[in-house]
Image (cartoon, rainbow, N blue to C red; front, side):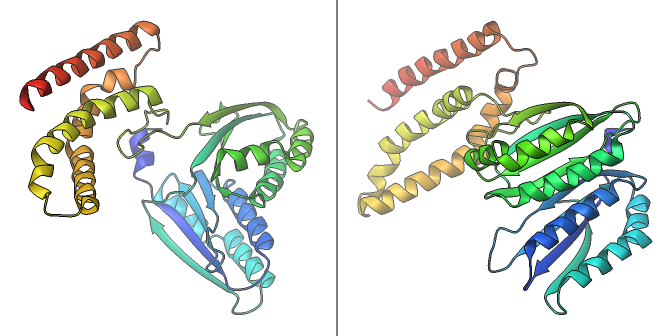
Length: 316
């Protein structure tokens, strides 16, 4: 399968808004719908995104398929129609609103994520899916839950199932991982699961300035901090020398705001994109090692020295 083909596929987004009723019933139904879709031809992945508002509870189910034809077949399938009827039966008339759309953009609001790679024992796929449904429902009830991404094996020769679990904070994620409910379910799942791998996806420093690499990993925080300092230091010195004297008629609070606003705009649109491009191989090395880090560090320190020397000449 070519990656380019997958990137062009649209997603079916189901928005469910509860006006009154039990949200636990909705969660269980969303998981059931997601797992049922996984059995259909062309299914690639799905994601449940929970509501973050108590006053306007909206949940989202995003389902990706290999082709638009596969997506359409699932959307109009008798199984899916039956599931939607089951949802309507769970809530009183007028207490539920459903909306569907097809889009090529869909995302999550979670800030802390863990990727879970699960290898299933041969012949235990159905049992695993039933067990996975229950663990997904259980984790959705914990504080800070921000959604679940689910992807079955992309290749018939590979038995790895991928789950991306999101919470709002590391503490709430740990709370779920260390909970009695999860430990009991994990113990039960051993009869279906051959092995499980966990990979924490770290949150990048200055995420708007530094993208993640192809594996979803951001650059090291000490590297991002050093590169930000390299760009911000001369900007701050030059502004202090040449811009602030022009604003002496304004209160210091206004001057500080204008200065910070200008710095952020210049950093975001010009300096940081340029710096990240120039230090791409250092920020995202193809091979880890002390030598690669040391070389980049030496260049950064040398540039620090050049900046200081040049600015001493310019501002004095």
